[in-house]
Image (cartoon, rainbow, N blue to C red):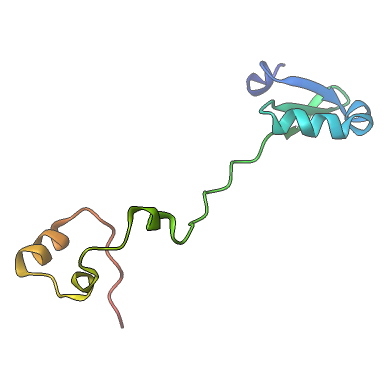
Length: 97
């Protein structure tokens, strides 16, 4: 019985995979999914990893110039701004113990 999950994927036996592992890894990194077979039966899957999340780069916005009013970042929110913040759909921090 055929496995429906591997119908569109290339099947490679273990001996062939051991012989050509470096090339198969390059093909997987390029986006191909390779199914490794043992005795002709699907056994494992060689596939690309998820791309890493982009790292935060400090100073990325420095090209826009300095903030016009940096002291505004430290001012408390007005009651209207606070109400809007509380009503937003942003995830809420858990309450402190």
